[in-house]
Every structure is written in C-alpha cells, then in structure tokens.
Image (cartoon, rainbow, N blue to C red; front, side, top):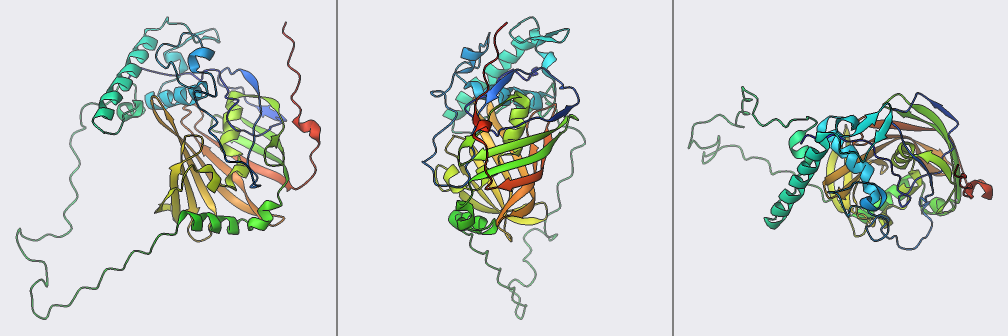
Length: 393
C-alpha cells in the first residue's frame, strides 16, 4: 500500500489524561501540532459508578466533522485519527510528507496534490472491501501491516533459499515402534506432570491489591502530587508536575497532542488500581512468560470498547505490563506500557518508571520517571480551574 501518514492535528477530549505542567522543554518538536486544553480523570480506587464508554461515535464528532476533505474514513470517531495515522506510518515505514503537502514547513493536510494520497485512499478501500468478504467467510480481518510489514512495497516473493525445516523429534524408520513399545521388561514411562490449575481473574485482582498494600490502604487514597521527567525516543525530554484530588478531579493546562498521548500512555498510574471495574466482563486467564518472569495474563474487553491485556507477576502479584488494543475500521492498533521500580508510599506501592511503546513511527517509545510522589496531601482548588480562552486576534 503506497501510503504514508502524518500526525494530523487532533486531541480527543473524551480520553483520559493527566494534568501536566511543563517546566522545561528541550529539543525542537519534529512536527507541527495544534494545542488544546485537556481534562481527564483517573480512578484512585475509590468507589465509583459503573464506567461507560468514553469513545463512541454517538458521544463524539466523527473525523469528517472535524477535518477537511475526508473521503474514505467517514464515520470514524475523531479521537481515532492520530492512532490510525500512526498505524499507517508504522505499516508503511514512511513519514507524513510521502502523502501530504508541506510548503516550507506549513502543512496542507487537505490538499490532494500528491498522487500518493489518492493511492492511499484506494488501498484503504481495498482493505475495507476485503474485510467485508472475510467477515462473510468468518475469517480474521486483514490490515495494512498484514502485507506491508514496515515496507512501502509488500514483499510478494519468498526469499530463497528457503530455511530448512526442523528435524522430527525422533529419527526412526517409518512404521517402527517406539523404543520399549511392546517390549517385555521395558521401563515404564513416567506419568506426565499435570498442569496446575489457573487462578481465577478475581484471584489475580485480589493478589494485586494485596501486593500494592491492601484494599484498606487503597481506600484511603485521596490525592496525589507528583514530579518527574519524560524522555522520548526522538530526543525530546521535559519535566512535569501532576496533580489529582479525589477519584476524578484533575487540573487542566494547555498541552500538545503528542505530549497528551505520551502522558496518557505513561502516567495514568492511578487507573491501574481499580482494574477489575475496567473490564466489561470477566477477562480470560492464561499463563505466559515476560522476559524471564512467569506471568498471568488477563485478556478481555474494556468498558470503553478496547481490548486490554494485563500481565501480572505470578510470584509477587504486581502489574508488569498493560497492552490496550484499539479497534478501528482499518485494523487493530496496540499500545503498551511496562511498569518498573515499585516503591512504597505510606503503605501503597506505585511504579516509579513507566515505559511506553506505540505505533508512532517517528517516536515509538518514551520513558516516564517519577522523581517525587506525595499522596493524601492537600491540593489547592486553583489547580483545577480551566484557564481562560485566549482572545482571537
């Protein structure tokens, strides 16, 4: 698919993020972004009403209502535009200016001057039409990455010579009986060790709550004030301050779309306490390995329509990784955060390091490190007032 993407300018006010005060920014941003005011809430684990989807077509504008010259992705929620465009970039191994016009640093996203943009539309239509056929056949859908795998032109020919197949587990003549089979006096084989039963999802959630300090300590959480740094793969780094009071009261500040996405992925620590309520139904449980650790993986649908996989250390019970998968009309888009360096704060453990990985081709990873965290401290109400809108010239 001859397609590249840009980071189109849009920030979803319906998605959760943290209040951030940027105190130092170094390194020029690699692309233009539009700034908006963002407000959000993260659960502290306090009792709360049942969650409802935060990103559905009925609750937010569609992409063609927000952007100009949308011809194929009509009806897609506007908040999905940045993830979809980043997914195109990751699939193609290209950047924004492959399809979009940039005149001396000024982007003209709506322009159809470049023929690659119309080619991209045809390829998107191909994916959509193909998936309609596959749905009728009850087969898994395809996406851009299915064929492109980070290349502008898909590799359609196998690379020769082909790799040799692995040898069979036993090298014996066809029809020959296994050693000891039917042989009098042959040593009996040991019975296979039964696989231990898996814990239930509730068992894993309860062990996690106990590992971070217990439900009693969690229920006492009322506020958080934190400072830290963000280091991005593109070389940008900056400091931040974060304020929260109660389960859903946050401050607001003018932040860019890229910063907002990074903070949503790397700093939403308090949303990882009341985990059970984030699933719309009990998730499936399986065993796996994460690096050298045995983990239990919970896999299920969230209340906001995403798929979420949580990786818990089988020994300690702590959360090690979260993967969320956004379902869009052009495919499934993953987002991953790894949690490290758990520390005790007044009886509750929090991960002080979060490593985020996304499909953003030009800036695929970032690391958030808390340098100072205080919980259950007073937070001035002025932190949560929306700044006055700037006067139009």
